[in-house]
Length: 112
Image (tube, rainbow, N blue to C red; front, side, top):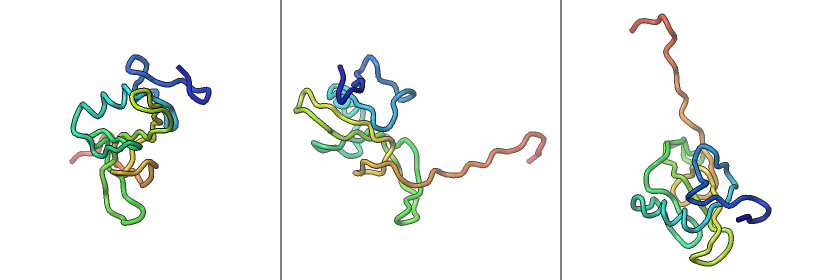
């Protein structure tokens, strides 16, 4: 199935390794994600998987906040809705923003 000329991912074709922000998924896939755990956020237009993906620094507050895999509804009616993957967003939001943590790797040969 296609929407706006792009593939619509299903349970059989979806993976977080290949999906990109802006890609489409079907209603059944979003329903399955919402059934995995209690959702972080869920409405008729936005659904977020209940387990945080990571944490980012919120540019508005400077505080670290959890991010969640996010989907927003773009077309159709239940049970045939089309949703768009929005990335890992703050709770209740559909735009990925903020700064990832800076990780420092220990150099080889450095003793503790």
